[in-house]
Length: 313
Image 1: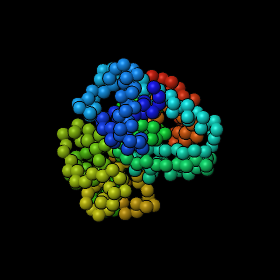
Image 2 (image 1 turned 90 degrees about the horizontal axis):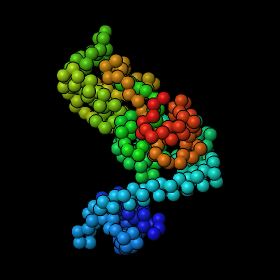
Image 3 (image 1 turned 180 degrees about the horizontal axis):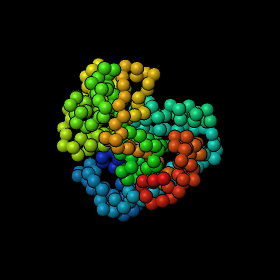
């Protein structure tokens, strides 16, 4: 048996048992993948996949256990490679961050500016997506770090580290009636058309829960994954925006005003996610601490050695 066979089995499962897609993902031929899997099954003496004709349909019971072992073996191989790269080149390499638009646009610029000063030879790539997509990139070793508010903390195989807390704000045009209210309530906000995040992003679940607890059905006329898009439509007067507080820039958002509503929607925590069992290069630890100073290398290593998938400080 060999690592190529292991990779073919793992990719076949990742591609929903489509060997053609698995072959494309691994830059090889479909007959080659099929042959390698059959040879592995012959060597092990069990069928890994259930088949219908020439097509594979699902994992057999022994196949599920074999896949689990394959995942662990390939993770260890990846760790060995990273260890070698780390000691061969402590201050250079590729660093992939999977995150949402809000984090990339508002939370990361200062951090990455300092990071690149310290590690000018490290090539940083930001991969944006939904929390689910971000977690998938991390689990499949296509990202070193995942950063998001939603999703990461509940993803098997991902260790979620608390980055920072934040609250939502209401954004309105300069002369909006809500600016004249001494106190803002959910009932007052619900009187207006609302523009906010898509359900998978930036604490949207907290917004929905707050209205539901008061038996309110707000008129959400526009959902977006991008805070800048939300602000654009608020400026046109289409509706009242509810966004993450860090998305407000006083210099750039001169046509908007902010109303603090943290008392209505509560606190949110943005997490940094790392793959459980992964080897982190030295500059990754530096990035984590720049992003959240309480997350020192010692704290992160303790979290990675714990059995919990969510680590609180």
